Length: 613
Image 1 (cartoon, rainbow, N blue to C red):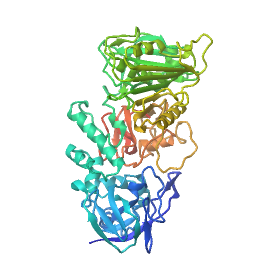
Image 2: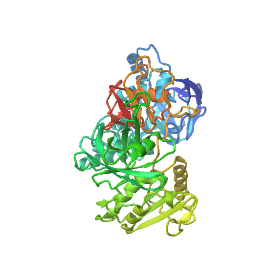
Image 3: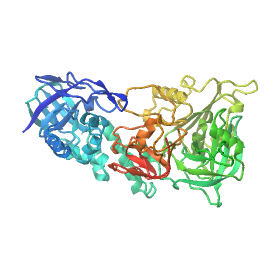
Image 4: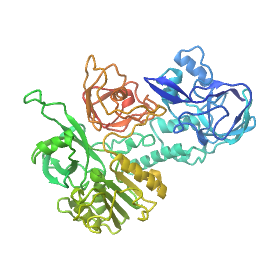
């Protein structure tokens, strides 16, 4: 007979952590007497981060006394008080390897349904004073589980837990947890799990992504050697890089696209065709400026990423660069690079690419943000074309294609003729061009559609299809505005994809916002400098400092935007492209990242590395 041994509640609080403040509800304490179990939580309880915890499908967290005894032995602790794992219900019985998703239980007046395993999170390690705890819960197959409240009612410690219904498919909490987090994701088990309607929507989406990944691998659509876990991160959806590190490519052509944008066409030094890439991806350049303090010397390299803007099957790579008034890299390229020179280039990478689909597609950009979506337009128009003459032999896609672009005026409208030629090859294309400050000789109806900035307001009444896949690139404010507008218009958020200039948005769950700073070297230089670590999107190169436990900690010391949740190699939120170099792991991740990627939360550099951060 299973029994509710302790009921634990606690409201979110701010706690100090690594020099920052975390808002968390992980501190739970036993309470006496009855409490109402309601749809979203137990009376007196709350969650600090509703993105990862709480909600109807995560209303009540359950953990077992048997697991308490296990951790006391494993961690060498005399006694761990109930509530330490952040659970609301400490139970005697209901082990994770026997309780199934969809099982229903009555406790007192309330009825509960098992909805998903615990989400891996660093905060359980914070509460337990054991940073590895998130990984240990998964690897020891003792995660605990969430339940939703089917019938609200009073419950009290000491009451019997009565099973009232079996979940379909008979998949245990430990089975489902392992299916997502541990290596090996059997297709049959994924199918079984996705038939469980009571499994929470978030877990269903993750397992569905794994199923799609498995289907591509079985069909031969995924490149050999590709790996990773798309159920945990979109970073794993990028194919493995065509080569490791940097290789020299020759500059074949330099072309002005507008008053402020110029393009470089790059080819293999041996005359072979460069590997194809996915439309929307980018390459990273390693530039070596002269060191003004050392005659004839070379300064620290400048690492910069640029979207590819030509036909993905062209056999050459074209990057398009905006000349920024104070841009070190763009100025260096513009003033020193000539046809015939060679540049160090890392292979095409990135998760922003045109997906296979028959749905309508919206390509929206502002300024030089046109580059990745222009490559998508090339792919849709059939490819096999010459980007210098805008001719092609391919067959245009039958998909409905919307080309939306914002520029200041015709003189700043890069790729105008090229994009028009590509759109002419598409049977169902639409173009909508906005000039924010058209010149006197700019022709409305010919050069542009309407004056003003391209925004959610200007797109009202245009007739965009709500079932489209949308790809946006431009300044952050532009993309935020369009994303909000397209969502209000009725477009599904998961079909709106964005590519940002520079570093991506940070994801630091539960950490209270603090003053933002541009990336910078750590406040204290290393006593014993290690190999260089370059954060390419942040434009920063610093020496490794052994006092940091991981690359993640170094990035945080530099105010480089980071994404993480578990900090122990489980959740893969920190997975990033490793453009060159190698790392060592400590601890080893529960499942390795995709080929060419790295988990920065549990790795250190072996040699000089370049990260796509």
